Image 1 (spheres, rainbow, N blue to C red):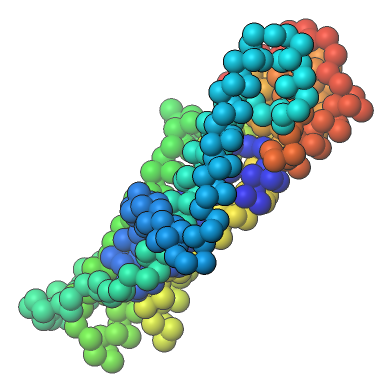
Image 2 (cartoon, rainbow, N blue to C red):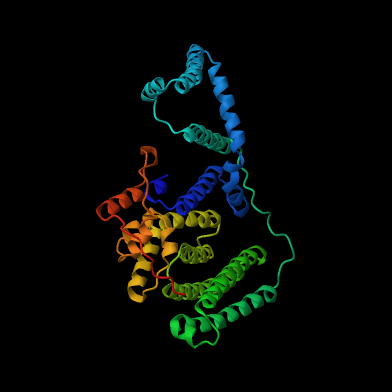
Amino acid sequence: MTISALRDAAWIAGSCLLVALGTWSLLLSGGRGWRPTALGLLAVPLRELAGLGSLLRGALRLGAGRHLGAALPAARGIAVTALLLAVFGGLFATADAAFRELFARLTLPTPGPMLVARPLVFSAAAALVGAAALVTTAPRRDGALPAYTGRVLRPVEWVLPLLVLDLLFAAFVSVQLTVLFGGRDHVLSTAGLTYAQYARQGFGQLVAAAVLTLGVVAIAARVVPRSPGADRVRALLLGALCLMTLVVLASASRRLGLYEQEFGFTRLRVSVDAAIAWLGAVLLLVVAAGTRLGARWLPRGVVLSGAAGLLVFALADPDARIAQRNVERFAATGGLDARYLAGLSADAVPALQELPEPERSCILRALVPEPDAWPAYNLSRERARDALRGLPPGICRPVHAPRR
């Protein structure tokens, strides 16, 4: 709710709402380990219908009690009165214009669609409350995976693969360090390699390295025999693998940065930047779990780090940053994707005010926010209206075509 009041970008508010629901569900469900963590993220949503039914049954039982028995006739009377007013008031209002005007003054101005939307929102909220109550009162099961009882691995069966994998990553990282600091010169000097291909290759390396590293860590933590010596060797090999993967993430981030310098910032590109940062944080959590801190907290730590990262991402105002960087790029290169910028939210309006004419007017004419009713107040839209009141958009002429 806080992000919805601060940011106008629906893609940010929607993501935060989904993550907040999953995190809230996890905190209510309890349990430890990867499987109970995954189930806990869905515990409340999966019990929504059951939760609404539970609340209704509880309300009926409460209403049948001795203390509320006297209030039921009054409630029924109010309900019948409201129904009669709605039916007959609607008939009279449609039959006589003067009465319709009087009836409109006596009733609250409520838009037609809201008559349906608000009860639905209330029902959904009530269902979530009921589902949360069911999840909180349900018996909690640990749900942890059973201990590994397979064949005990000899050192050569797990030390050798991990050591070779570390050497492979070390060779890959040595190349990436050259690329990481080579930057633009490397891209321009490589035959047949465009900025788009360079960025896509970097993102593929990011996904492959992260999945490989986390998968190897998960398997090794389960199948490698536990002993003081084996634990130290395993922690050393897997820790080195995680740290080298961080270098791969840095290289991928650098590649994407070159692409953004060439073609500007978009929502997808800044989201990928944020995903790279979060994957780096997850790898650091894995490294920490491999030390004396233990790993029981790791599943929840991964989920909560993602939720915290999304909150920071939303508070950083992505649409405004996208607009600001594209304005700076336009001043430096003359390249501007006006159609894309016109599709941003009101968060971007103050930054876009810095554009020269006619680009400023052509973009901002599509971003003028409508006035908000008090339940839908939004800080970004209010700031956008203030900025446009001081300098409204003028006449739109053709703008520069985006350079690709």
